[in-house]
Amino acid sequence: MKLIVLDRDGVINEDSDAYVKSVDEWIPLPGSLEAIARLCKAGWTVAVATNQSGLARGMFDADALEAMHRKMQRLATEQGGHIELVVHCPHAPEDHCDCRKPRPGLFRTIAGHFHLADLDGVPVVGDSLRDLQAGISQGCTPYLVRTGKGEKTLKSALPTGTQVFPNLSAVADHLLGTP
Image 1 (tube, rainbow, N blue to C red):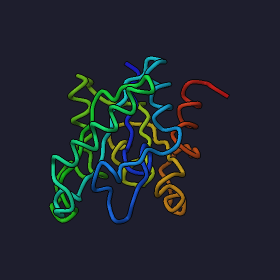
Image 2: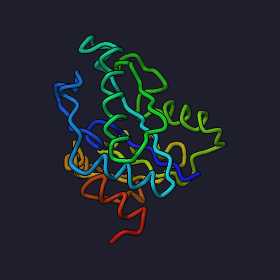
Image 3: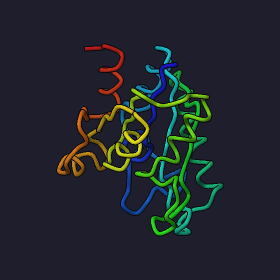
Image 4: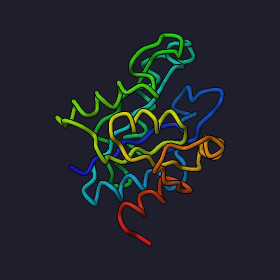
């Protein structure tokens, strides 16, 4: 199985320091859904792992989150792609759960869903250090995009082996060997 794990906000859709709280605020980044479609057409399975502390903070509810994910799925499907699995952490940082990235819980859930013993070598694409750290803890290969919080993240010490790309489309080009 060729599996790839994507962060959501800042990788697939626009991010907001005020949180993405509704379907109307969920706006895809240029080329991101087409990149997912190209990966799918080439045999990749796409999973999304996203922290959604806005739930715990009362900024939106589970129905609003589900509506955002339905929109993401619909738009990916319209491009010829499919997101096989979306997992999210609903907790606030002070909850100290195991699923909030950089902790590994979401990645363990993904491995279990696909009946994988490990995620060694699976690309993880994120715009923040915690996205990469969560994936690396489970053996993933880190890819940082400059979209979302990516430019800010570049100022941090990146994990060894992190490859940096302008956006998700450029990551897809790299993985598919497209110049």
